[in-house]
Length: 411
Image (cartoon, rainbow, N blue to C red; front, side, top):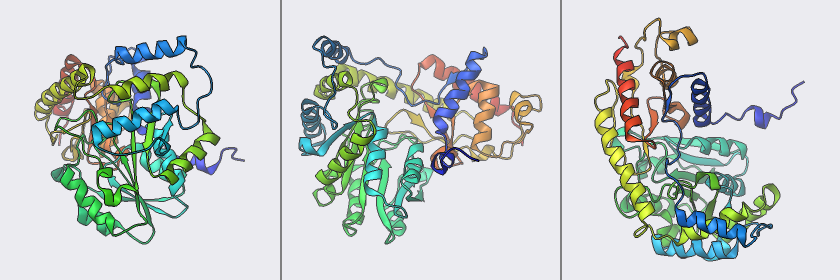
């Protein structure tokens, strides 16, 4: 008799975490693996944030916080949203959670009933589809194109809407593509949704501060749709605070209350010390913060370097990302090709033909010792994801290895 629930048995493992796990195992076995699979800035948390955390410990902020977050933090988030995004929110519209992933999970659970349809432009972040599955919703994927910078068009969105549509989820800047929506493109999406008052939108803006095009644009800026937008953000990416586990939503009051209700039964409030530190992070103006500016400039320099290097890899089609720290090259030209019979991939998987993004990523992992993530995890099997959140030396060496391994493939 099976002891586990169908809910767990049918839930896919996060492919990004799975690839990171395999890479870690190979490293432990003595392989010199360069991991470009994980979405984590290779920077340290700003000193002023760390000082605030130490001060919080000394001041004994070590007891249960309110479930949706400390009032001071929620006020600081409201001030940040006004300063950076020109968005007006009240503290009762903010819920602080254990990372942006929990924020997304709770928003979906608060809105989606079994059978409701959720529109997800593909490529998408891996957990969107799993979260919708847990809510017993139905994911409706919109296939986007490399030529369109992997962005959904208003016509595609309108065609995907049915009477069962309850929600849309998207990210900008995007994981995995690194692309972002302009104000004009967001307005066009909002104009489509204006005619469907029962459809809500989760706008995932966790990469807001890693934007190489200038001012970040939020969907909630359009007043005629704001009351149906749940803005997701946090401190993991823009402030190099992945381990602090702080995410938040800014949402209509009814949705914020529903997320608070859920959180009260699942995790309660997130870490008190991390919350006090995040107050300081919210007070950092991205236009003046040396830490944020420096990180963005370094990422931009890496992006430009990797863009040039990837264009030299046979079979890789690349577009220049506008934000985040990923490339999502189209690699289907390599499918159907063979790898050397004595390659580690061939020996491990008893096959020599590369048929899809998983095969290619495993070949590059075992034979080039570079960890990437297969595009199928993000809803596009023609691509692979590469993170450039590591040093220039490692990136140069990684792309050199990839190029060398690809050149060994035969038609």
